[in-house]
Amino acid sequence: MAAQNGKDLLIKLDMTGSGSFETIAGLRATRISFNAESVDVTSLESSGGWRELLGGAGVKSATISGSGVFKDQSTDERARQIFFDGEVPNFQVIIPNFGIVEGAFQLTSIEYAGSYNGEATYELAMSSAGQLTFTAV
Image 1: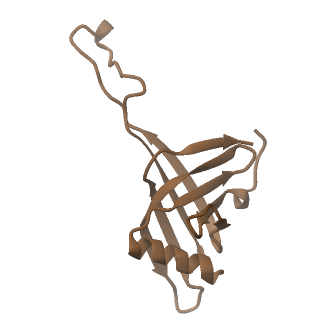
Image 2 (image 1 turned 90 degrees about the horizontal axis):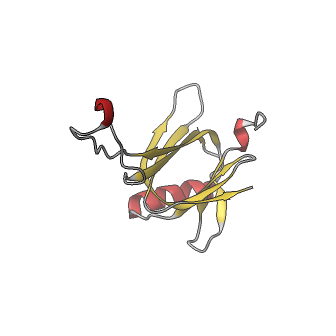
Image 3 (image 1 turned 90 degrees about the vertical axis):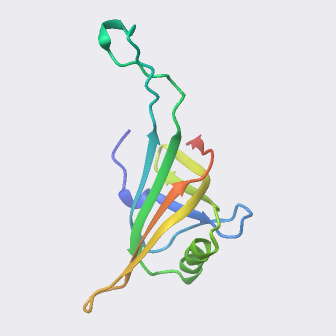
């Protein structure tokens, strides 16, 4: 895969629950992480005393995070709404020249910051809340 622009890694939010995704405006930095827990099945009979893992048995999860500046009232309001209402809407993460990850995420953290001589900023963190799908491009 050739080098990609970081600005092309997009986080999109389902604005209405009907599959109408919009890019969360004002983000300057975005990240998605995938995790899988391992299940250790090592026993006294394990060959050479090496650890053995049970493939496909651990819990899978993903986290999304982003930080930026306020740019778009509708996506800012929607993010606040889903946090305070405890909603678990669908998000999409567009990974340039790779694919789209989509599924339900819970907004687990919103942080607001600002300095006297600077812009107001925010940071978001989300955790997967169900099975994710991947669509290759």
